[in-house]
Structure formats: structure tokens, C-alpha cells
Image (cartoon, rainbow, N blue to C red; front, side):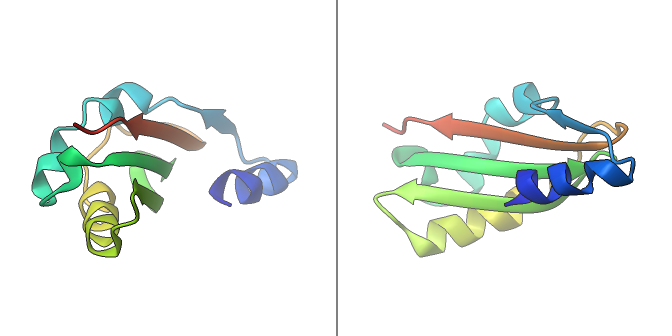
Length: 96
């Protein structure tokens, strides 16, 4: 949904890139902040504007609402390098 909104807003001059923050998010050390997340298959879709996380979708397999909430909170608090425009990055982790 974040990507669709960003693309729709592109007509208003919003620059959109896909994946500029992938490397920072793919390192995954923040998974350890959420009990059980490291053991699950997890996918994240993260929207970033100007280096600030403005939206997070987290899905675990099997679904774990508590872990998903924790991941949204932890990822939203990440400090990322400031950039221009709006970026949507997707990362997945296979779990153990």
C-alpha cells in the first residue's frame, strides 16, 4: 500500500525509489529485539521518507501478531541515513 500511495503521489513531484535502504534493513540485527522473530520467516515492507521510517508492514509465517507488532515498533524506531524522496524497501528473512 505504501508503494501504491507513493506512485500515485509521484505526479505531484514526489521522487520514489525502490530499495535504497535494503542493505541497512537486510542486516536484520533488530530481529533480536523481538522475542521469537529470529526463528520465524518474516517479511517486511518499509516506507522511508527523508531517512525517517514512515510506515512498516510486518508479516511472520506462521502469523504471530505479537512478534509482528514488535517488529513494526522496532523498525519504526530505526535511525537511517537521510535521503531525498520516498523509498519503499522489502526484505525477507527465512528464519531458523
